[in-house]
Length: 168
Image (tube, rainbow, N blue to C red; front, side):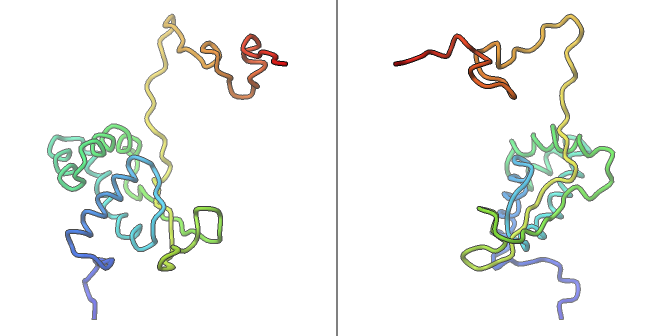
């Protein structure tokens, strides 16, 4: 009987499993969503939730614990700078697992090699913390139209008519 044995072994040694889950959580922090197998997503979810909890503390000790667990200083820095502040008002449940179904391009429902169920692991309601708006009287940031690049909703002809040349 498997009473009180929660760890999903995933067919790996403990060192390999810990490194793989740390890398998966680092990818989640950097890319905001990851497509992986369902078993790996379920195993990585508690680690991701614990890292956000450490990030919400914001202390030096919490930062060192996060780096020690994730092994990537850049991911830990991003965790403390962007991800954790977005969840300051939330008391848990920072991630969601969405099972993939059907065939939609690269997002197949099952892995091609071993037919493992695939899933998306992503942050719930992630809205990155944006910097404050510029003060009044401050120069406005340059737009794409000022640089000669087309803007959204306009074609290249209407955005920069002088750039269009006729060749015969």
